[in-house]
Length: 192
Length: 177
Ligand code: HEM
Image (cartoon, rainbow over all chains, first blue to last red; front, side):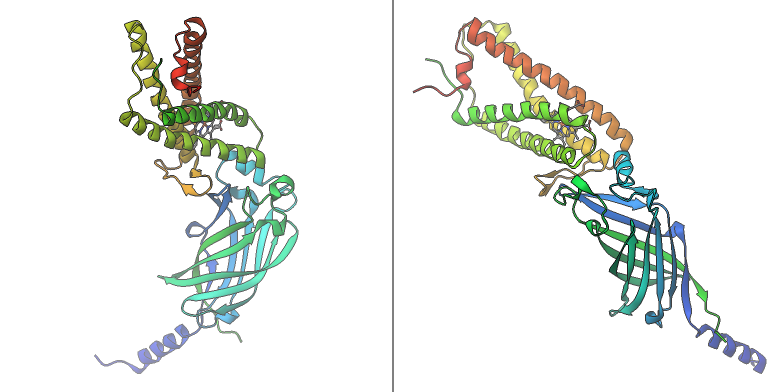
């Protein structure tokens, strides 16, 4: 079959446009999760946050330009039991009445080889803001992409668990937060 | 002269007895405490001691298989001998069933039992809060029954010692020489 010049032109245009940045921007909540593991008297206890929002701008071709913001609704915590849930939203822990959300905002992202990246940024919980580095990986999954990573949270830095609960031999200081975010892509419209 | 249990059997008997009495007391005390770091500590100590009983009782059973206890005095009525064997058998069953029910209850609550914070026990059942609520009752009433049997056991020993004065308790006590 002889291709018409018009079709060729069309294909070429499409080709060019698909060479434009593919950016992953919209996190799909049903395909994403944020979990954590606390350690109580040497026993790892799994928990999760049911509600959170995340906005991303991630183009695998330009990871340095990437941005991320994750906001966790702390009242949606499931710390493993009803008793623990009531405790952890209370004043001495998250104090969700005054500080309903935890927020991470990236300041820079860099590739650390392969499909692994590092996002530096600021974590704010309970009125305190601390620098934090999140290691994460990127993996395309069909039209979407999956980002998996770890936030190395140290609860006492944010006053999570005050008073007698500050005893890290009972509840460990390190509460690693794991996330798996599935984001769909938006074809970036060329600017200007 | 009366025949006695071996030193090892005595040691295991009194060690396990002390642990079990402590477990009853701590278990009943801690269950109603409001959530606090202290409560988490007590729960862990209770679990560690309970698992210790579970392990020690197997040592005890193996020891007993190799070292038969001294025969009951021939003067004792047959029904009493039967009752003694049945009672002791029941205590062995409860020494295993009580900690197992606690272990399963913890697994159902989603808490792995980690012996002394170091050795994790397998979770034989997954997290299931409904089942956990049932197992909590099982653990409670099994242990209340256990406590009743232990009290009965002690009362019979006291009766032999101070009412019948037949030296039965001495079988489980080191000789003075
Ligand atoms: C010989 C061994 C044991 C004895 C005699 C024992 C006895 C008891 C007793 C009397 C209670 C209070 C029950 C109540 O008032 O509701 C209790 C509670 C409890 N036991 Fe045990 N226990 C034993 C082993 C274990 C083990 C091995 C575990 C876990 C690995 C365990 C976990 C618990 C827990 C979590 C509670 C509190 C339940 C609640 O939240 O109300 N126990 N135990």
